[in-house]
Image 1: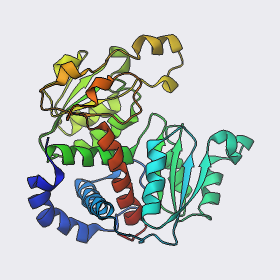
Image 2 (image 1 turned 180 degrees about the vertical axis):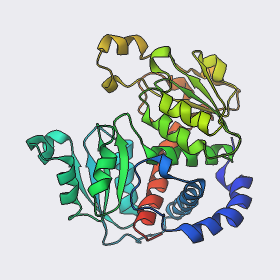
Image 3 (image 1 turned 135 degrees about the horizontal axis):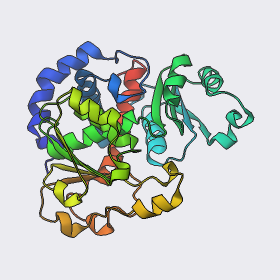
Image 4 (image 1 turned 45 degrees about the vertical axis):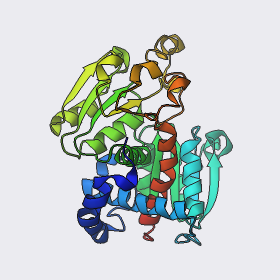
Length: 331
């Protein structure tokens, strides 16, 4: 496992190529972030560079008040711990403030207000909006009417672009590169918005390949596999986790109970794959998970150096700090 400061990728590639990109492209060339499909490799690299700078500032305990006087509207209409808290932590670390709305049942949408009206109203109160919503496509609807920068924090089984960016940052820190990565994705690939978003981003890099481990009922959807084919990204679909353990990264996901109408089907599939320490001990493979886990990674994996999922969660603060500053033109 490589360390950020020692990585030749950070030492050489970023100073010459990506710092030039940052000078040319910051702030980002779009107002809203709803999908990783709108990001170019240059955009992604620039965000990762800025995240590294934000991490260095936090590590030194330095004050960074570039967003002083700015307000983030944190709208979470679907349960969230890591995403919501890391967005709010990121805003506070940049000197900004937060207003919140939690749960549709506690908002005016419960009274019948449309999502569009809610966003137009919130745009009057805040300088930037981060929203999680259970309906796929809700982020695009919100961004279409928002008069302030809007960030999709997850729209049902659709997209989760900030999770994909923090996953990219994690892979870069743990493996030292994004080019040439072999990643195995395991579990709920049908409904897993994190694996969809990450696929679109990793597909921008050179010599990346995927092993997809899922039961037939939860296979990667055609919208993603067609992307692989269109971009000549090699992928293999298998049903055994053992067939994917020769990868650089093992990306575990939970089977999402909230996406199932048939609860018996969920119970049958929820622990189809359980990763144990014995399976990966001694292997040079980085284990990631967007969390929460519900049994698909045994707790004996936590003590292994391979286990990067809690470090992964921590990286969300730095990436979201970068995005907030860049979208508000304060990077």
